Length: 91
Image 1 (cartoon, rainbow, N blue to C red):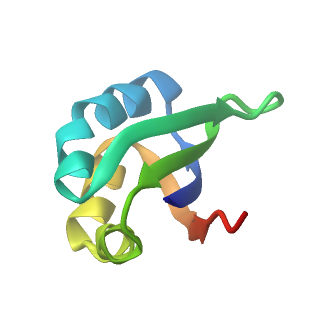
Image 2 (cartoon, rainbow, N blue to C red):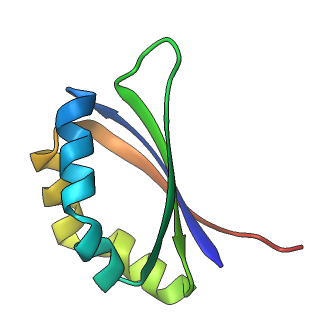
């Protein structure tokens, strides 16, 4: 499995979450398994961390490089540049 570790700041968590949930089909079309975890910073609830699961590293990387991803994030109220990393468990 490959995981996308994503950290971002949002204008409003509720607005962002609605946009995130509405784009599940886009993530799945890009190879996501649909398994994810969402965390909010204790001191700043508009600072969000996510872990998204992919079966295939190439599809995960293609998703991260898709120009549509930036547009979707902006529409959901992401502020500034998110920090994105594709990581893989090696046990």
